[in-house]
Length: 315
Ligand code: GLU
Image (tube, rainbow, N blue to C red):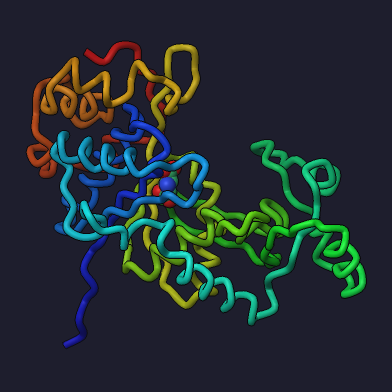
């Protein structure tokens, strides 16, 4: 009998500050998605950026998830750093070499200013599409740039091909990578592997087959699906979730200290906060105290929908 793979979702937070309400909202939905399917949850710390991520945030993050009642079955545990991206550089280097061996990777020497000149804003969201300026540099031109002391970033050549997928919440999506995204960075000029490479290689290697996260990452998904295939993995199913905004229309961010977990934990209980998040998600008619497990049975993406939510007051 063919063995079916377990359903596996993940939390993949960046320990670059205390979690805020919006992070928690996405985490609850990711947890409910996987638990409602009888699957297992993995926790991975995306601490690649050494300037922004700190070990104390990692510990706090895990503690905040546990406080709310969001558990995980595998991945990060206190005292080990196996599931911290900052410790997985050798693995990303291997993935990088695999793509390089296919002739897809090239050094890009563009400065910030040159990048602006060498990219066009994409009509739909204003993100800039790199023209591929450094893709065709000759060996001599590269040598000259190296000699001038410039450290390159490393980009991958994307195809003309259309990448289409059906998002579990946002429906059919598609992107022509060459037109809509352009050659993207796999490794920064300071040597740090880029999010797109690390997240893809990790989701693939860790057997993740359900990715639930904020829709601000929806436009990264075609890149990740394409990279997955290049690295020999089967892409997961993706479900993107609405974002929480403040009344003036800004997305909640780690700068909104008033809605961070430090403040919330002093003001409320896990059950009340879960109730508030479930109500905000459309999973309850009123914000009543509830435990995450009590929401599993009634969970459905139809109730959640796509509209961002404005959060005025939590409690
Ligand atoms: N680490 C990313 C973040 O915290 C999320 C990555 C992902 O879910 O793909 O924004």
